[in-house]
Length: 112
Figure 1 (cartoon, rainbow, N blue to C red):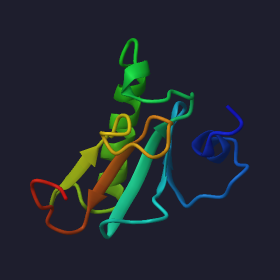
Figure 2 (figure 1 turned 180 degrees about the vertical axis):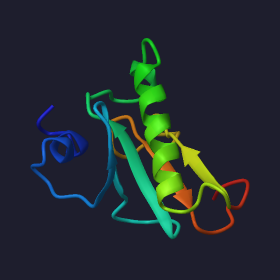
Figure 3 (figure 1 turned 30 degrees about the vertical axis):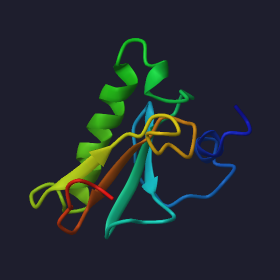
Figure 4 (figure 1 turned 90 degrees about the horizontal axis):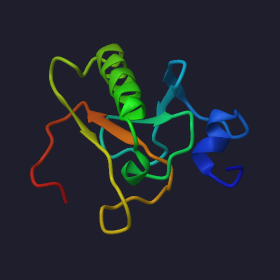
């Protein structure tokens, strides 16, 4: 998946502001933040979207790292939002499974 932007970040071919890492996941700051804290958490193995999940291990791994990042960045207690978009109608623009971690301000519902 050499053309995949996030796979290239995992391979350290493209720089990113990395804020957390585990054996199977990577967390880095979004380059177009929608909140004071906006981090993307991705599996290191390429999966296009939630539709590629077979056993849930990747979702568990990125969820654990998202919690760690929320704690380390100081938004776990005040609250934060996690979002995974799937497909065009779901708002997915980068086709590598990823979870947004947004915090540092009150979140509106429904989202815009």
